[in-house]
Image (cartoon, rainbow, N blue to C red; front, top):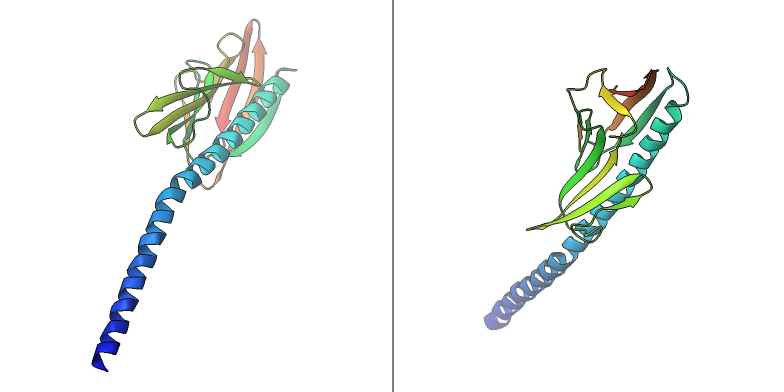
Length: 175
């Protein structure tokens, strides 16, 4: 009778270990795919947000003094508004998702997209380049950047156009 009790205890332990091993294998194979799909969703959403910002910048340029508010969320990565380079850039590091062929830049709407291979995955950059068309400023300044990092909260920015002669200035402020 004692042998049966001991045997049942050992069987429970063995079956539990087998179940945990199977669960670990499933998680190890599924987790990268989940991260890949998550990164794909973030990149697609950010691409849409950048196209929306580009539309707002185009819309405010219809008349001097026009201004519009833009709201968006950064779930992963960061967005940098750089007035020195006149670009708005989103980057996501070590993504599991290969968005495009590494090293080849392409255009989606007005958004430039570049995927670069790194050791653990891919660095993906999406950016709007206004170098030849608009003078981007941040709080009426061409020195400071706005850096928006991942956050559960919405970011609000105000985009204002003020034309003066040949200077097509678009000022961006974080509110």
